[in-house]
Image 1: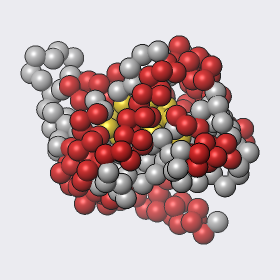
Image 2: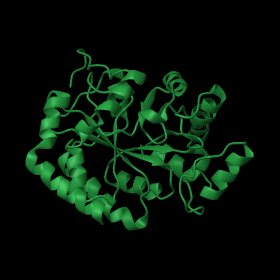
Image 3: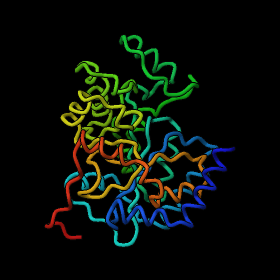
Length: 297
């Protein structure tokens, strides 16, 4: 309750102070870009809040599909004229994401779902048992051992809806603590290969677990750069060609946050707090390429 009150008070202050507009001038030189939102669970009690968030974004922002990330990575991205474009993403692959995927499809929105492949078709308890049989102690993704991951058929159906299915750490271990090639192949390479098998097509996108640059070792950074076409962090910020890290910035959104707080985040009112993380991400993966002059909006 206290945290909720603090977020409500902060969002009111940020709106009155024009902090979002100031950050756009100082951080992005006034440019528009692509803001990626990251959600996790979307259980039935939260679906009304989720629908309201989607409706609010659709009413105020041009909604982007997964190909916007491809365009950013290749220097083809063209920002909207008035507002930032918004792309929805989801992490972990909880089974309740299937309902979110169906709702997005119904309203014409395509998203990226970063799935823990070893959780597909298993409960949390079965996911842990599977990794122990491989000699690996997986990260405890949820305390409820009965929660289920997405099923293979649901993943294929989501892909048929136009959503992109992408990789997340195979055992959700901290890549900042992993240095050996065999561990990185288990967490990253095996995740990409498993999803490729489920989908019947290459998987090229990967969001590393926990999302912060401190959760990626030097060896893991090199492996990610060599193995994945596009890498996604979970550090708040607007993706702007030529100015922000190539490893994409994404805003964590908790559906329990006050609506005003989420809206201020979408305006960029918190972006200035993440400059050290931006610099570290840029050190590991470089900057996004500037938009090519031969691309016409």
